[in-house]
Image (cartoon, rainbow, N blue to C red; front, top):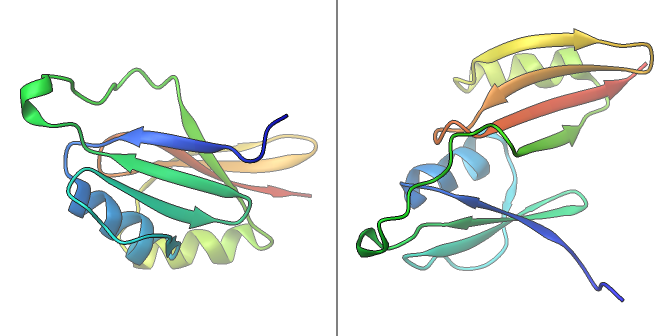
Length: 117
């Protein structure tokens, strides 16, 4: 039934968002950037970044109801790499099966790294 899926993130500044997802996180730009939409490729996930025209008066939500997770093999190494690129982490949660650390993109959207034990 479904061929693929993606997450679309509403952003106020498309150029800044692309810079964060591509340069800071090291993900791949999937298509050429236009003025309102671009797709970023992550392992197993396509992230659409959408900038709505100002006349639409729609602002990105800050509700915290959406987050994007990235599974990593070496959590400590991934955290150090992203810290060196300016990412600030909010918290770390250690469970029986995995450890999770949260951070945000420039728009305030919640992202996290997860590593199984």
